[in-house]
Picture 1 (cartoon, rainbow, N blue to C red):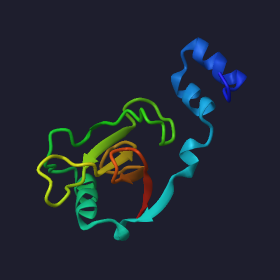
Picture 2: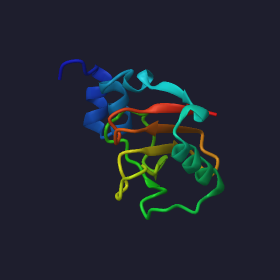
Picture 3: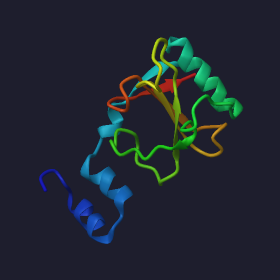
Picture 4: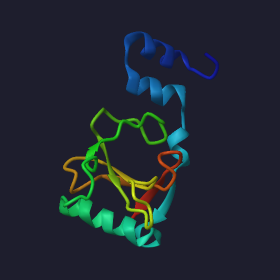
Length: 127
């Protein structure tokens, strides 16, 4: 287990997955760069407005729990993050663009992130 600290090994043994993610991959989420909401595509700005308004959302998956399996966002308890589709012009399916927000209630998120590559990278949205 190269790069894994003693605390991470202990956390794994005790089943503390949130600590394990933080310890085993320190700083992965620190590389998330920021982007101004006004610099995002119009469709992302529209989705962000819908999030703050509580909907309506065009897809059934919008507002569902995002599990952060990629571990690119700061580790939080399951259910903290929710994902929302950002429509892509000319695409008939959901496409790759999403906004992921964390916090309760969902209409007042603590933080939101934008991805245009289906969770391969994220940028923190600044209003």
